Length: 90
Image 1 (cartoon, rainbow, N blue to C red):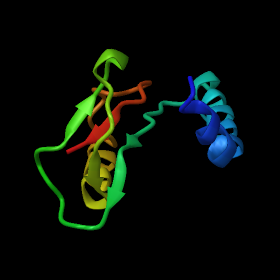
Image 2: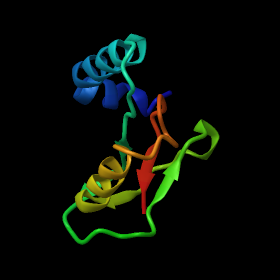
Image 3: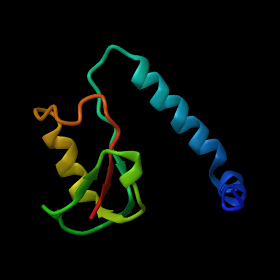
């Protein structure tokens, strides 16, 4: 709880906006997948990144922008994560 106070002060408005945007997407009749990357780094694509679906498995991590792009491009045809918002990390 104590960690949330500084986080809320620094990022509160941005996260409130993000939450509202995600709610609008989830309520739509569109097909959607929301990718939630860990800390973004420059670097090459890794084929070994993790896609964490269950909140109990969520944790912080890092991932390259190229790996996030790889995931998103694959989701155009792969419906595995349709209507989900997984965490992406290496």
